[in-house]
Image (tube, rainbow, N blue to C red; front, side, top):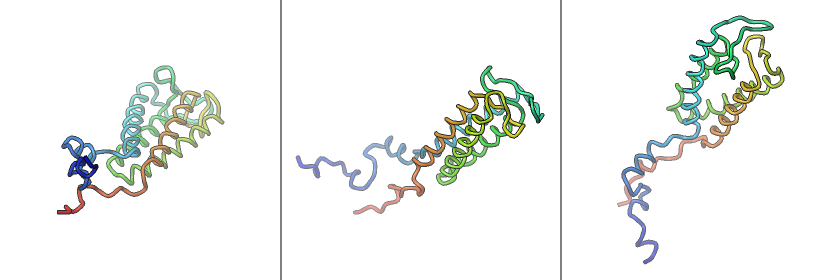
Length: 169
């Protein structure tokens, strides 16, 4: 049999050969959309949970802090930053271009925050407001790398839809 006779007719039309594959192809999220959704939800929940540990909005040297699960230092300011950046991610998760911008922009911001945190040192504060420790800095570094990676892995323009191609009949 030649390759032309073994190919399924959907292949020629750019369609899937099975209904379940078609739904998956049409509903597939870009890496940036997955990042915006997962990181957005995680940061929002982490910020809310953080208020159960410390809701202080103090500032200056020795800013009040408590460690979520005994690991990540938080205070009210830190929690607000997580809720705000997480909420933005959730708001743009359905937008192809918006999620790509979010992933690259917030990925870069979190890389800078990680760098500033490493420079500040373990148990210090950023801008005399936001407590950080080594674990926070590592988490911020991972969030930043994942964001920039997801943003760069998502093409700047949405690929054309296979479903909108005219039937070659």
